[in-house]
Structures are given as C-alpha cells and as structure tokens.
Image (spheres, rainbow, N blue to C red):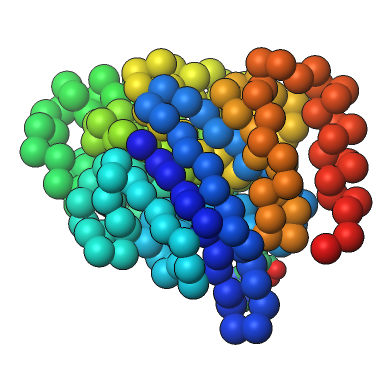
Length: 236
Ligand SMILES: Nc1ncnc2c1ncn2[C@@H]1O[C@H](COP(=O)(O)OP(=O)(O)OP(=O)(O)O)[C@@H](O)[C@H]1O
C-alpha cells in the first residue's frame, strides 16, 4: 500500500534523506523512530506529496503522489501532532466539513456520529465547539475522519506527543483497530514503548538513513532501547 524505494531528499545542500526504502502492506503499522532531525517528517511529507523526492520513488496504492495528488489524497489521512480543526465549529461540524472536502458523499448525521463514537469521542462532546477540546479529543476527530473517509493509509507524525498516558494508550488502541480493518499505517514517534506494542515493523532512522528495520514481535523493550541508543550515537 505504501512504498518508498531509494528515497533521497535534499534541502539545498543538506541531505535530509539518503536512499530510504521500505514497504507497508494493508493491515500493518510501521513505526519510524529517530532523534529530532532524523528525517521522519520529511518521509511523511514525501508520501503526502508536499515535497518532491530528489531521487527515488514513492507509491501510495500504486500511485505517485506527485503525478496523481488528488487520487493519492483520497486514499490517505494525515494526522500531525496537533490536528488542525476550526475552533468555532463543533466536532460534528468539523467532521462534516472535512469529510465534504475529502469528497465523502455519504455524510448522514448517523454515519458521522457513529464515526465520532467509533473514534472514542464521548457523545456529549459531539456538539461542543472544538475550541474547548483537549488535544486527545482533537486527535479523535482526525481518527473519525479516517473512518468516514475509509482511508486506506494513515500517516501520523508524532500523534501522541503531549497526550497524557491514558489518552495515548487509547489512541494506540484506535490505531490497532484501524489496522485490523486493513489500513496501512506509517507513524513517526518518539515513544519506543508504544511503538513496540503496536507496530508490525520498526524502522530506526538516524541522520536521514534507515539504519535498522526490526520485527516488533521479535524484540524486547530493553533490546529496542539499546539498539535505538546505539544507532542514535552513531557518527554520520
Ligand atoms: N524545509 C526545509 N529546509 C531545509 N532543511 C530542512 C527542511 N525541512 C527539514 N529540514 C532538515 O532536514 C532534516 C530532517 O528533518 P525532519 O523534520 O524530517 O526530521 P524529523 O525526524 O521529523 O525530526 P523531529 O523529530 O524533530 O520532527 C533536518 O536536519 C532538518 O533540519
């Protein structure tokens, strides 16, 4: 569903990504771990088509984000650290608005409310203005949009940073549910502990390179931490 082959991205003279390759199938969660500046956000922006690769290729469901941006965006849902919503609209109205923008035709009140509920938002919040929402509640509106849109792939950039442990655990449970419905999920995170719990595969990035690819089911939390520290300490 998501694939990067020999992906390289230069920002002027600075090489942000060097020859990165991976694939994420439907029903898989791939977590990218790495220190600040490792290249995680750059990778996500290349999938979204916000950036153009210097060399190498990217595919979303067999499509190139540069050549077919609309078709690619219909298949994707992007959740950044803070989901951008209209504070003066309610959660329900935001979902209706963004679902319409995403081209979702079936936007009955029941369908939208069911999606908000499936994303874990309490029903008494649906008709409250988003300006009063916590960060975790905003993330849930993002997840509800993924559900309504039936997004085939999710791109998440540090979606749980700043969430309390309970909200973070709830968010990861939702991701597992979306994965089980067949979504391909790429998540950049600093949370090694949760990454190991929810990921199918973990990629360790350092200085723009994918240093290691690990099978999450085969690694203990301690080994993951040691490998992470070892890789992050490496010289370019
Ligand atoms: N628009 C840009 N122009 C120049 N350099 C950039 C640009 N965007 C990113 N970079 C550089 O590219 C490298 C990779 O940045 P990126 O944001 O992808 O890292 P990251 O792993 O997502 O870090 P963080 O955890 O802080 O989000 C960094 O050295 C960064 O300074």
